[in-house]
Length: 289
Ligand SMILES: NC(=O)c1ccc[n+]([C@@H]2O[C@H](COP(=O)([O-])OP(=O)(O)OC[C@H]3O[C@@H](n4cnc5c(N)ncnc54)[C@H](OP(=O)(O)O)[C@@H]3O)[C@@H](O)[C@H]2O)c1
Image 1: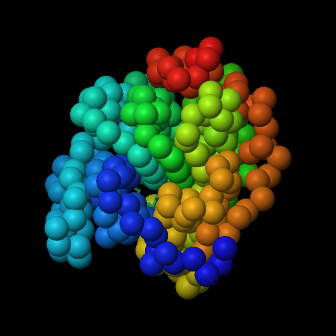
Image 2: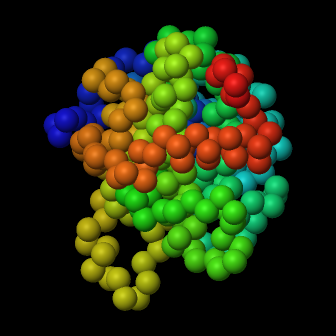
């Protein structure tokens, strides 16, 4: 689907959407386009000043848009719970926020920061919001991964890479977890007979805060796309009528093939159970979880 642009987004009036990390980067144009097409958008961000500024910038671009700020720190499960408690209706969740290749740090709950923020925070958020998604027709969850997922490995005996921390390996692990989670969510929702589609996206290389170019990579800059272009796969997954659920969607809304490690149902099921144990969040709509 290479000709798709955000101008193709259908009218979203009556739909409520949450975009995590919507204060900057890819998340901001994602929230903006959803609001432009009539959705009620909750800008979920950890920093209130940045969140309110994002809301103001969307209102400047789309006067009269239904957009509000909600405080969400994915690296703190109490914050995730408080945020979810404040949401009353939801049709679309875009699990977009992320950090990349940071030195070893821990979340409030003691998890390695990249795995804790990018995967566990979004796992918990989705589970806590699932009851709201379950009562809406044609609900969707979009999880932003990266093509870096294919280099990821999950060692359940050392999830936090405590033995030998490597920031690139930790990022790849967290993005593989995003992929496994998004595809497993689709399988579980279908099994439970829910009217919910779950898609995983790769935004391409976009010029955002997450991309830190070292002095050896000046040429890489030339290949970076604007953040709004990076938002296209998320917007396509979130709104296109052609999406069936379970796809991995890349730049321009193109379908990508998922590498074997990302398609492993065994790995996905194990990750799901471990994530449930670590976060204490069980998806009530799914049998046995
Ligand atoms: N840009 C690319 O080339 C690229 C490529 C592949 C995948 N991705 C993925 O795209 C997604 C969006 O990244 P981006 O490129 O837009 O980077 P970005 O500009 O750095 O945006 C990341 C967003 O996540 C938020 N965030 C970080 N930690 C958070 C936390 N604990 N709780 C809540 N929000 C948090 C950040 O908030 P603050 O402003 O407060 O830090 C920011 O709004 C990420 O999942 C990333 O892995 C990006």
